[in-house]
Length: 85
Image 1 (cartoon, one colour):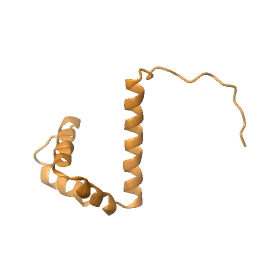
Image 2 (image 1 turned 120 degrees about the horizontal axis):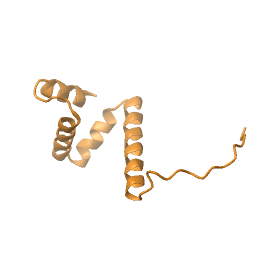
Image 3 (image 1 turned 90 degrees about the vertical axis):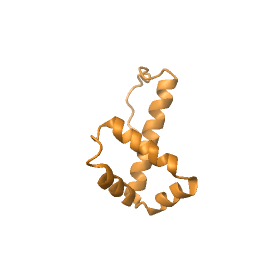
Image 4 (image 1 turned 120 degrees about the vertical axis):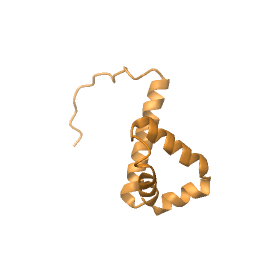
């Protein structure tokens, strides 16, 4: 994605690249974009980039939901293995 390449080239010598710097940069960029600009960026993504984005969103959203619900240590009940083929 062009935005990522542009951000990397602009900040690669200014930031350390640690998680805190990247979070700060990402949120600063998002604060400057309106809904239509974000949708335009999504339209520029190829299928793999869009799948990766949705995967990260689903993973992080579920992690947050499980953490909020206090279920991070909860394991599903043991069910006997069944062949479903």
